[in-house]
Amino acid sequence: MMIVAEPDGDGVPAGVLRGARSGPTALRIMVGAQLRRLREAKGITAEKAADTIRASHSKISRMELGRSPFKQRDVADLLTLYGITAPSDQEKVLELARQASAPGWWHQYSDVLPGWFEPYLGLEQAARTIRNYEAQFVHGLLQCEPYARAFIGIRHGDADPDDLERRVAMRMRRQDLLADSDAPTLWAIMDEAVLTRPIGGRDVQRAQLEHLLAVCDLPNVTLQIVPFHIGGHAAVGGPFTLLRFDAPDLPDVVYLEHLTSAMYLDKPTDLDDYSKVMNTLTIQAAPKEATPALLKGMLKEL
Image (tube, rainbow, N blue to C red; front, top):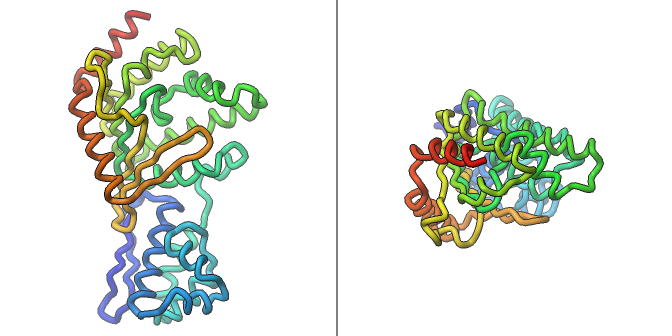
């Protein structure tokens, strides 16, 4: 989805939507960027904007960065301050703000969803391209249900059974993204160790390999394996995910997940470094055409 931010002949932002895929996280960033452009075009300081909505400078910053939901009154007051007074023009932006404040599908799992992971789900939902490297475990979008249950059990084995099942259900719901009519492109690269590590035992390992074999047939998924025999490779720093978006207001993001937190990097130098690593990995890994044969070979050995 894209917001056309350029003003029309009267200086009013067009606010036109194109495309169908997005989510509240992406919309918040885009609406925030549009409010920032309007403010800067009028030469209005963030302090004056904050005074107008009876808020702090930090709130304006959070709004413009898409890091907080929007109140309709605040958006309307800011638009008026910025010279957007026609009801029809205000309504275009207000409607986007309403959509941006709506909870994503993952909200129903808020009781088992870590706060640091929620932004990633929103970005993943809006991404046009997802490029990922995994060193130990299958990426969450590609896990079969038995593998997901075993994997989640490693981290939350002492949790209530109902809690565990909700975590599994959330992961399965997340995978609906790949079957969407406007699904993103997923380019997943896995170390061979990911496929030989018997998470959940031999039967689960077999089910996961069979699932990945079926995934290879999806037109929007590319799966490559980094074999042991190549020795060291470019991704010495560990697993990471690169997200790219259609909307110009959404910069590429590098996602790094830790045990109890995550990092979101969008500085050009970081993006350049991780993109180079990913590009090198695509060359060092076995070609995608070889993946089905590699998976079938592993299945025969089980």
